[in-house]
Length: 374
Image: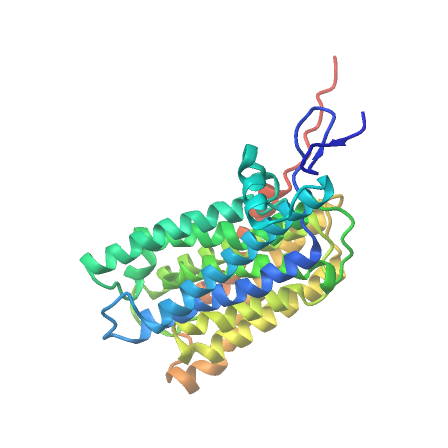
């Protein structure tokens, strides 16, 4: 049966269920642009918590940048919802005065239908962030300001992280519901940016276990090897989870992984600027290596063996480059070469590859073979 429109211009399917307003590529790009402000504010605030010991108040310039970014993202989404409601009233021939539009939006919860597809969880994330932001201010007033790892594990900060994650993945969800995207930066740019933001958010809140800013192989502490291996495994799981997710849905343009990992390497310097010669070259060259392997193998869901090989090679090469970088930069920057024994530094890239390989089975499980009838 053909679809029809209700009195407010929203299309309605044969089942009578109101069809949500579709997002557009233009709006996805706008959301990416305003999200840069918000995510940038997060890393600026992370820098302040890590590098300013006298920070003793909630009301700081860093929080001002962070929370103003949130307000800009919220304003952008709500403006689009308002414009969608206005378009529906124009289609139905009703008055477009502000009072009429507000009445139309509230009637039968039409504002929910006007949220672009994929951005419903973004709105939820904005609400979660707002509630946790008030809670965070209260926490700081009564319990003080956390520093270093404490700031990453604060319950209110983890609530803020959940809200940001739900909000910043809006362009990714919106594009996932659309079809026909060509493997170009113009078409898939919002997807790549959105996933990069999400990846960087995850590495932000696990920065206490980041090999890029904590060079465990250069340390002589007894537990540096086991701690470093654990950190490598955790970061490999986060990195390859994001990489395999975007591969599952799209054919990607060249430079995707260099951008994703390289930008993340730059952002992580907020916690330890002195690690620039480790984080940036490793992340950028590791991403470029992933792009080259991706172009050579052309992994896809109908060729699972290539996907698994790709998932193994990317972290393997990433951490080979990491140890090469440490061996060059360590004596210059940290006045120390690699202190790990050969089994540790040689085995770390291999076990990281195994993590990527295992994740490929989670995202792309083997097809079940039907039992033969006797």
